[in-house]
Length: 273
Image (cartoon, rainbow, N blue to C red; front, side):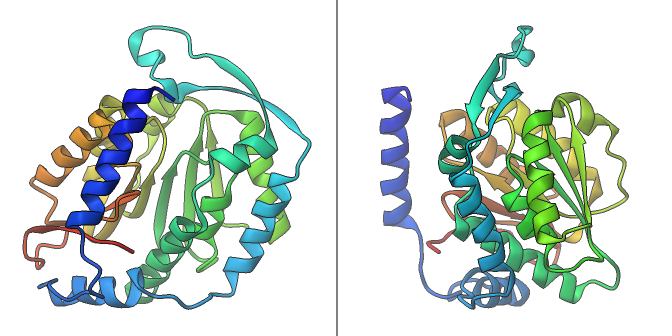
């Protein structure tokens, strides 16, 4: 890792810790958003799916398999270059590139909440499948929901699909290929929850957000990963906050939550969870 980026992340983390709240929702003025913070973000119940999914994470960390993948996340394609092809052990990917259990479980709770208030099955989109652990967290709250997940590497997606088979999940639709190309064909009328965890550059993050924005509804929640990953990701996060369709956001440091409900007081929060 570039030492300047490493130093930047340390500074951004310290800044977040000094300015973020840990109040269980106090100070959140919109009643529904207060409920989400109090009953979803700070929910520490151990749901049935957690140990099953974490067992799969443990299995992946001990895997001896090797996969090759084209790393579109470097931004090479956007610069007119060929994306590099890498060969990696599944165990190494599992140890270094998977979201933490806390982020996966937050996604599970958000989907669980939206499932409870919706009159119809949810449409969920994930950009960046990786080994399928977060996808499982998105899919397991209800088999009636549809999860469409986008992954650039076929070998990596094959490992993810094995994870889903082990868990008995059947409501996930993988879309394999360069997300810059495959997402352009996404035509859903509504996107209830989106998890954007793909190419961590300003240009790609804003492009993905804008492509998904027309399908956001009043109750949609979009989750942006690694918002403090780099100066350009922070720039993207601030631009998303300023988007006129966005009414409130919650900065949880590792991820940012984006809300579109016109009944929310327009305010942006920093929270420690």
